[in-house]
Length: 408
Image (cartoon, rainbow, N blue to C red):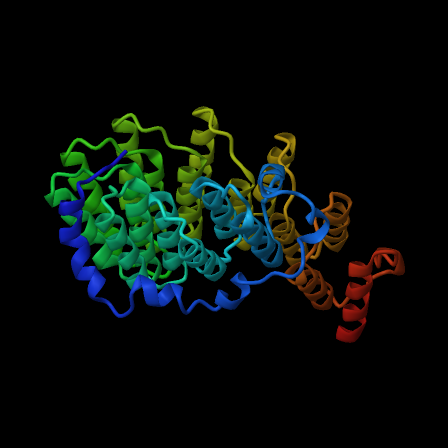
């Protein structure tokens, strides 16, 4: 676990504490502040359960009113619960994305004389980062240092992720550079967070992808052993940028370094090749996957089937579909819609209808694109659907019948 001394950490955190806002003012102006004082109602049918029973019985997905009532019970209990008990509640709430409520309850806990520990403050930092309140997050980091705690990997990766979420990727890179400058080598959790931030859809660009590559080269120079997850993020970004040869080079580099590619690596490459019309390369990668005993998933087949259908290679798409079924992979809406599109393009409307019926039989619900594709196929063929193909018992199919009549 990554640890750094408080005095050292303060040197790179202090500049970031100068942003507008402080931890104290933020906690005292939470939208959920007023809900933390009184809860006249008990929580659902658990009114008579003590807090220990409630915590042990499970608080996954806990609702706001239940959480406030449970917190109030905990505050009024004697002897009082430990900070660990409160942290369990805060963690459960944070997982349901009730960040403002977590911050308000943390404030109330401290006002009641129960001191935060490093885990509480880490939860606070996470909530501020998720709420895009980076200034307050760094204020909480300052509090960790002033209390003499040592930030760990989770704390730093949370801050780095928060910077990336608001597009401040360069500052996240600077933060990691400062760590390295202090002879603290980031571990894989921090590197994964930063590389993912550089390659996020909102931030992705050839420049950021290049920065991610530079970062992993620096880490390799410092003898940090990288994993497939880091390579996958960069390969996926390169594929989306259209830099397929570079992505393939990085893929080969993984093999050279003994890093085993996985289904996500192959899916990124197959998707990249198919999107640029290199279907043969995509198909060869599928063969390589199977040879390497890496099991393709629905995404693998869906990308290839869609690509073959769009260039009129319905026979090849159908062969891939049969292979997918033989492997026991469940149908999904995207794959079925692609095949329906292919059948309609070749005016094989009976087979298109059979695919639609199979979707419903397998519990794979058609979407608006599926319906539009089939309707468009019939319109182009100047055909009318027969009554026995209207599936009158199912509500979604009745909707399809009404739409089709309107189109005609």
